Length: 100
Image (cartoon, rainbow, N blue to C red; front, side):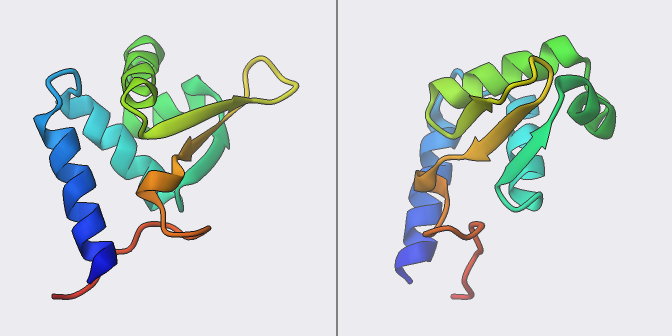
């Protein structure tokens, strides 16, 4: 029950944040579907989601700004790891919704 309440509170906070756009939710759902962490280039994710890399980058910046994701730069300039923050994950596992 705690996990469900936590998820509801987090998503409500996102829903009420006027800075977060509809496209940002698509990006977040994509990351959650990937297990909450993904190492890829902007162009690869943009192709997968049919989003322009510039618009995708804006979404990632907004999600990072509100504390939903972290961007971790590796050695390569093009590959980044995008990770849903711990607040949106249960310890080391993707966020899963519980039945009521």
